[in-house]
Image (cartoon, rainbow, N blue to C red; front, side, top):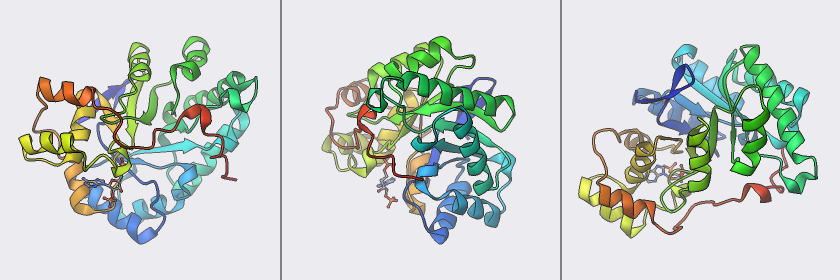
Length: 283
Ligand code: A2P
């Protein structure tokens, strides 16, 4: 298993995404295929409404807890010092996991949440710090935070964020956030590393893939890996699951990297964290 360093430990460079997997049988097949070809990081979220079936699948497959890196996310309606801790404990119970390897704030509060949005993020973060102090979570972090959201945590929190999961793929390099995170020792994880699948027919990616006899998905994932970005591709297909972790025996040329670095936006979600207010639907 290829990993990146994080604090005093390591995190797999590729994890399996579970967004939109809400059927136990599909979850079982997905996690079995993923485990069998070397995945150890499983990414879920309260908002995906699938923590219970992730937990059931892990148990049914007999996967050893200590071999896995289980990552979960706090939903927006549970922000705050106390609520964030309660929500995390509930997620752990649903997963039947005892502890989480990583717990991330799913979306930042932003100016659209009112003038005290920074305070809300800070209080939520204090809740995560407490969870880490109590040993319920190994690593704490955020998702979809831009430098303007991270600033208060980086400058004032006791424990700095260790991870930031944001959408990153060719055509959407998020350079400003990536550089800010690198400067502050925050490891990056890419959600939708294949641009939600929309990038895969891109002619430039296909041409680069052809040079190496690989797929355009592998080009995206290798590009992230070479930028020290961990990727969480989602697939329920065993062949594609295997392909997505088979990215460690080739490298992109300087010229290919330059082309990918400069690709215009060609697919993906491209959601602006400051605009994601309509997503507050989970109770
Ligand atoms: P499927 O589950 O049928 O494989 P992202 O991770 O960027 O959100 O992209 C997920 C989408 O990309 C899903 O629709 C998934 O479909 C598809 N996908 C994942 N891996 C591959 C691959 N290697 N080749 C083609 N499509 C893929």
